[in-house]
Length: 291
Image 1 (cartoon, rainbow, N blue to C red):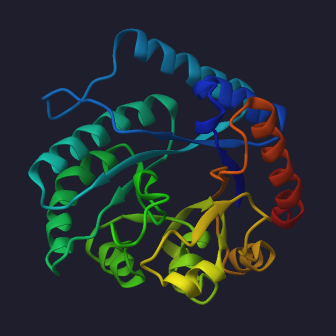
Image 2 (image 1 turned 60 degrees about the vertical axis):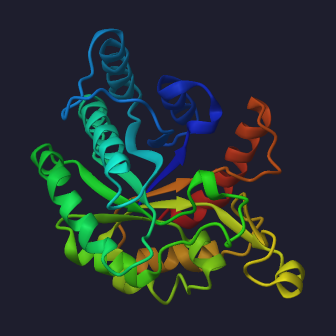
């Protein structure tokens, strides 16, 4: 298991993320991309200044011995929607090129579950068009099991997450698809993240480690479809049992990356507050993750 962190919110770009990780003895980083424009071409290109920058980042990554563990996409794809699929395929094509330059072995994405039973079969066909190019370059595609950025803070009246059976069905139907797993999201969904772990570990490549706080009084008063009754917290300030979770990962011989996420609304967005929060998480996790 390799300790990692999501460097997106630190504002220093990929090169700054690598330096920040090296200073803290962390050997991997994750980086998330918002929705971005792509050309009409089926295969996207990386060239010019963008390619030069990424090649420089790759050299820095090698020099500092800090890997880019995962590139995550915050766009939520709607299977079966032609416009969404065009954007989704284009963005993944571009991230494939970026990942190849950066020697990154994982690209993670989000799906919005459909309202009928056929949406998974539709995505299976869409995936079959995308996956071969990733397989050719030995880059793993990961389904993200977390709350999409655009829905954080929104009542469940406005959206719904995937069920564990959806994850299982998609993994079974889509060859070489793996998971980016979030125990915090399991917790607020009422899913026992420890109980289901043994069956899922073989297909989990990446952990998105946000803690979660459930406001029980609000939930009891308004119900699950009322005002938002849960929120992400910094590791150790919510209700995930990280000690038990990490011991379970060790027990099941998890070999992927464990990525600290700092999406806690109580962490000020300035550099000092963010780095202090990161250091607190590292201090808490390193003794647990170390064999």
